[in-house]
Image (cartoon, rainbow, N blue to C red; front, side, top):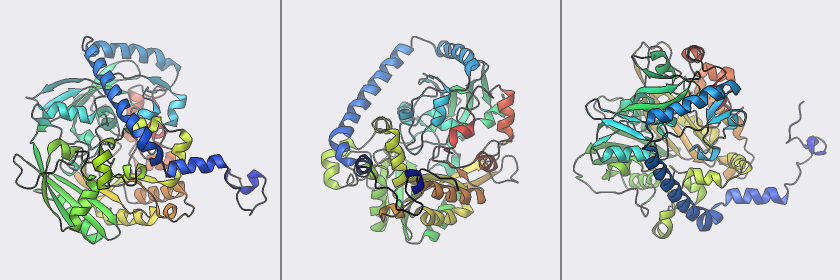
Length: 525
């Protein structure tokens, strides 16, 4: 039998002996991980505010200076760099590990690749006649939405966290509570300008280089660097009327979500929260010009975290209220859904919110900057973060599988429609669907919760649990979100995702040997 580092014999103890007692440094690091709020509140979170201000001011100054340099000129410089570096091995974006919004995995592939800094984060123009906005890939959702809403427009799909970038969402995974109507974030992209491994920039759309256009979603920069994109926009309205529908039965909740998301005249926004095996709430929303009910500016620092607020409204029998449009879009930013509860367990207490609630819009980048890799590994032993899309008919099954495999209390559910493209890309409806056919899927996310064994002080193997979850998703024709901790083998990855078009495009557009493969960017094996 192959011995591992956890086998007692490796440490000089006979087989069957008790494992060695952890050193004082290990115990101290575990304590820091479990009780991080002791350092976060007085030191890290105040420093984060200074860091975020300085970073925003620096980025604003760079944008002002770069206005003197045309977009085409900056892209030409990037082309020259790619031509030069592509002869020396695989390329990847030059973003640092701490700059990634994902908190659940590390980008080890960057250790062996050549980083290329993609310093492109400008809004290039809004074409109201064509209803598109042209942007560079580094533009964040928060900044783009502010830019559009001031001008009376918005995106059909606006992922909740403001720090997410257009490039990351277009090449990775972007979903929002309007995705049952409009699809994923990639479905609102009208065209890409892509820098290929040859140094050439090509335009990809439904009518130009359509094979590249269909292969880019979920490819995570493995086919080329996106240097600009056109996104579809729709007229914005100032308010969202939100309704809270309490449920006491998970099966009933799943049926309600499928019914609401699948109805042609259903609500504009649909999401669900599961708080336990028999408790949850369905939250729906509609655009409105004038609030006809109670107003809730949910993003104010003293307001309850949204998932907890929805829970309280459900316990009180539901109800209706109106949120300003941007407050609705970014309602989860202060609490990072419920990941902030792991950082500051009492962060949603009314007294803490009143006095120190202004601290609680934590920057994931700064939090990661203050961590070591060993700390992140230890977080992985104490918490679980997983997300997957499955066909709507399997919604109740995956909810119960999450409770069984991870023994977690809280889940977030968001419906999304996938469309069979021609040619088909990495992700789409189940096999057999015709070109243009749409199918309703459900995104189920464990947004960083403490699994049952950890709460009980029992051993827990996160890799084994992840493998069980991935096997369930694969068996039910689902897709694992590309940003989470993944244990898929290369063969399992290629069985889950349709790589036929992706492989052809990798060869045809000169990506092989130049850009890191999508599997190597996704897998943690």
